[in-house]
Length: 158
Image (tube, rainbow, N blue to C red; front, side, top):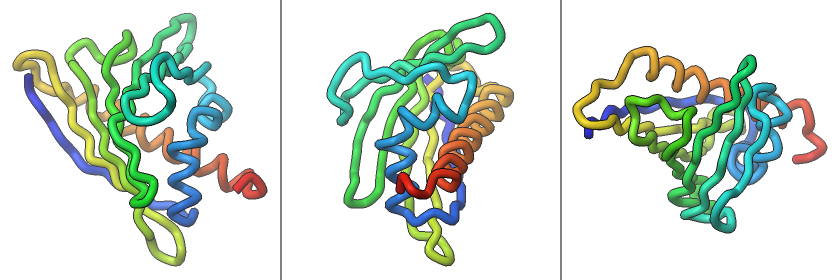
């Protein structure tokens, strides 16, 4: 198995605790509202804590697909959340899994920065395809911006 890693950051005007809550606790209800291709996010195993497996179902065009997401660690005190994409037809065929370690830290002017360390675990000696990396980065940024936009548009809920 090959392992390919990169780090990414996204800045927000939202305070760290609010951004963390939206990206972790509330994301299952927010994401289907703000990303039209995501139809549902359901817990298929567990209670929402570490070890929980969620199914994210998407419909693109006439095709329905899903990925399975496993929660690896939750650290509310330090605004950390780690999870892995571990299966499903939406996970590229060259990948065994993708692991993400996230942390929300204070940013400038009361805002925050979401930091993520991503590791792609490929099957066998397969290289990480540039197209897979770029699509994954774009989706991650898209998810972040969509959730942030929802919170900014609905401040009374936070």
